[in-house]
Image (cartoon, rainbow, N blue to C red; front, side):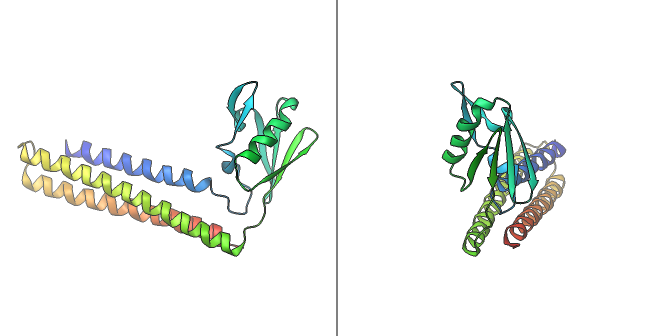
Length: 185
């Protein structure tokens, strides 16, 4: 029973870290990154369609993104959808391609992104601590119900804390790497 509680905690911490990574990958860092276009949806014959499902996308160099819609008639709607997404990117139609130049970040924007990154990291830590609280509550219920001895419960509580500390440390590493990425000129 205790191992299941610990495994559930590990799974929840892993989900929180993956969610943080996904959220951070969507931040524009001054380098071309296809993840920033993840939330862009195009009105494709009356259906809101994710951009990646109706085009091929690539990053030919660190400062540009190339989008080739599979249906050439969709170039204007794709361009319009990117502009409406308010990503701070300006698409340029180029025949059958759409080219996006990713501008370099200003020093002020870099510092602002650093704050956003730290805030998202802190939210992930809060989520992890919430999972710790839930795991500790479950362990306490097992002890109170007589399903687990006090000693086993204490050992499990220590393991919960160690697992939580390891998860928080991983969040700190993810945040530090992303901050380094953003602050690099």
